Image (cartoon, rainbow, N blue to C red):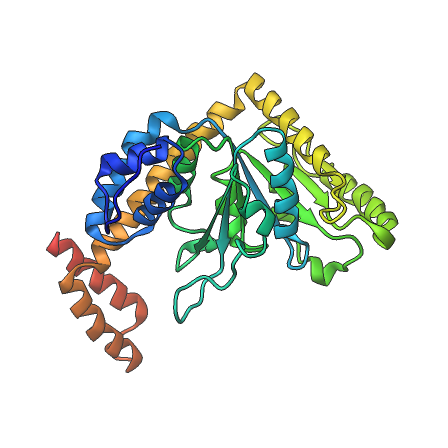
Length: 334
């Protein structure tokens, strides 16, 4: 494998070559470029993504979420180890909540998946959510493409928890897996109907010891509950299974169901249709991001916003009127 000189930034071709050769150090540095807000890095990022695009898209993308305390990281480590034992290369994109003060990640999933992080066929990338709507890192889509181009054929995207982020992750993955607990009570579960409707599979985790009987009861309850939801567009009937990440039981069943799902959507054409729709949505998301940076990056807008904030706080102008005023100013600038 080619050795690269250490410097702040490589050329676009060096990043591209490193990613395609499976160099994990270069992959990490390329993702850093993708996540950067510097204008120079944005230009570089676009060139990298455009060049690796033909080499991407060949993975199964799995979104994983669950209530706090359900054991997402432990499950993902057990699941990842199972996949690598089967010869797969697995990338785990862990979306961390971020501090509103420092904007840095609060969690550290790499430290919570010690065995997997030392596996040469696994790659773990924690990303801070920052101020992205829904708690999903802004560049997760581009990161998935880079990982695919680098040879990872299974992409696992772990979300922060149960909330808006699930909708965003569901919209960029092929299979959506919901981890649940047995006998935790409705208050702790905190699951809304919308999350259940998105799930392609529900896994009752921590199904071991004294929890085995409760887990079976929970499995039957959730399976019955899923029957009242409309049939998904994929044509797949969501399933509920049990697993124990610590005892390593039921993990193989999860992957078997994922493979059955993939075979079905390949056959009925939903896989390609869904990916195409995701790409169109992704385009519009990027347009919205560019417009936001264009707007807030304007010196004239920054100056006017500062004055308007003062007027809104002092009740000299309503928030609605202030917004209309700043948009009129923006139209004139452009």
